[in-house]
Length: 292
Image (cartoon, rainbow, N blue to C red; front, side, top):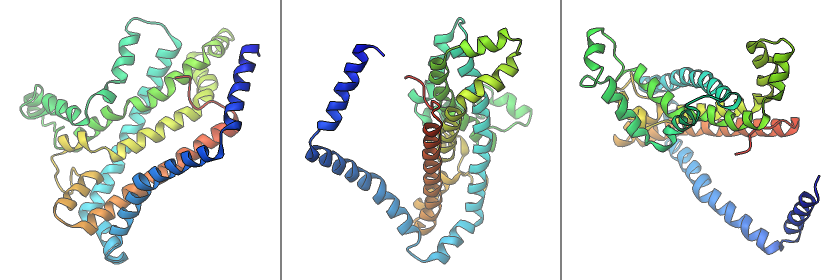
């Protein structure tokens, strides 16, 4: 370790250990206040309103046919979108981190595109392409293929808005690890598939799982793009977020908050799993993120 590095560590140590207790206490108070105001109170309000008329109405709202359909559709879309993005994310990250090719910068830019484009605009693009008056609409109608205002359109829109999460988690992680281990495996006679399963995958498993968790959370909670392509057909194309909006607009507050509480519960479970993955990665000493 160089003298400069030692000095930097020493300076950082002095800063963290000599900070006055009132300042640390103030920072903690500010952080906790924000957590209570912007996380704790909204969560409490959701569950309080959901059970405000009793548990019977709460469970009846979740057992209602349209609510069950929305829950099933939300899970179905996530089950399709997350594996699709898993395959894309691994392939894109491996190509970008391990190889040099023309168009590499363009590919990285395109991966970030859903972060820059509004989800509503993303949904409108699919309507422009596949809608009845869209570019491919007449051809799809001739072949009796329905994408817009149907489940396939919802899946496509969800895949689009969620596909950066896994790739963006893996790219810096793979870049930080370099190519030495893969090149050594290849030099010993391992095939590309064997190299991936026995060398690459074990090194990225925690980052991969972390990206899957984030992707799944976004897929289940997506509203904007899905709202545009779904058509809001009750019992057919409404996901849980869309169903909550419809119930709220109809002043059916108990049912709206009941479904919203289920979404909140899924978010809390996702947060718990995410924290568990971070703890396990730290415990094992394996990297979870690359150098951004």
